[in-house]
Image (cartoon, rainbow, N blue to C red):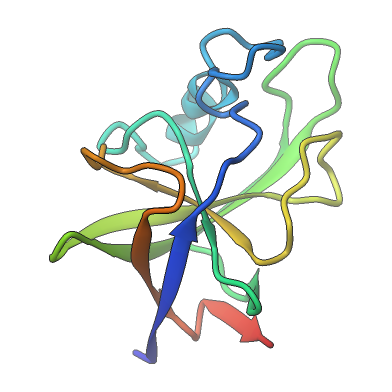
Length: 150
């Protein structure tokens, strides 16, 4: 395994996955609506908090080179086109502890809105008490799965 640890800072996302955005068309959050499709395809996200943590790794950009899970043509919301999703395992270091996680990557080629900066990684992990915007974490990646460029 080829591991790389990167400093990362929690940044505000669109708050759609968690359902916390005031103009969110999915009151329970998009992640809650998508999870049954992922479970049916073999990915159980129940161990993770139902929100993504948006981590900025600027100036580095990332791409998923070898996903652990790929879901194509997921029609998770009525009146919206199907989307593709990729997931890759990762770990996050926070307050002296390492937590297992997954990178959640709705493919921009099939996404209709709420795009992320190419240096922002959306991570699913357990609930991390005290986490706020500006919190510093360590993002631990397998560089065979995740390609990085500066």
